[in-house]
Image 1 (cartoon, helix red, strand yellow):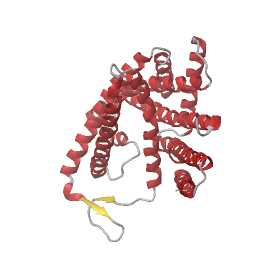
Image 2 (cartoon, helix red, strand yellow):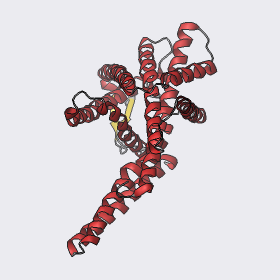
Image 3 (tube, rainbow, N blue to C red):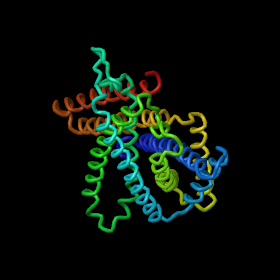
Image 4 (cartoon, rainbow, N blue to C red):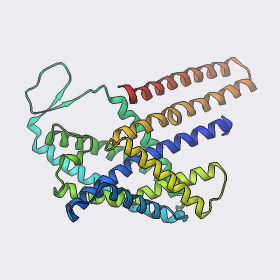
Length: 333
């Protein structure tokens, strides 16, 4: 807002809402799928419509609160289940890699292989994965409600560094080992790795049960974060009916997205990450920096300030073009 005025505020608000909405949509899809498969296993036939209604009602009720510390606790519990899921995937992937180590080879595109499992070193769809990284970065907005409720705010800087470092390290480790392991066990691996297992497989039941608790607590928290952003943007203190109305509209939008892209988690997250990434990661920060340098040059018009401004302008244009290319890649590559 300081550098770009109301336009910057509106842009940041919209990009943030889109990113968190994309996460909520993919999470809702995963939660419905997990509940459906576990219910089919435990209780026989249970229709998909009933599952959607039950999940919608659960998330709606849990997101009606207005005490921030409650949602902080919910996010903390959800984080424990997320750690359990990642740890299980890491162990399974490591076991599968050791088991199938002799069958795995890496493909650089220049030779033929006789191995059963071929892992590509390069894929033209890498732009889609870059949007996932942008989306994950933007979703760290959810840490703000945790930081605001710290008993000792002086530890915020340390805790954020530890959090980002742990996420980067263990996320990369789980992703690499998990991909190699699942690729070795299931050469025709599906987008959702759990779909490779039968409904009564113990590993799939464990992961889906943990996902039910994780997403059942995380989705109300995401709804709350979006609600706080919305009413803070319009500078209004919401009443109960307004909270209820926002939650219903937001969750209906989430359900609509999952209906248009059923079981297409990556597409939902790619589109949200691509649209938000071009704004919050590439465009807005560079524009703010260029605006700052332009004001500095106007206040003191010397050759040095002019040179710095022109360099910042070139960087802004270059980063904006890169963001456009990555956004283009979500839809056409």
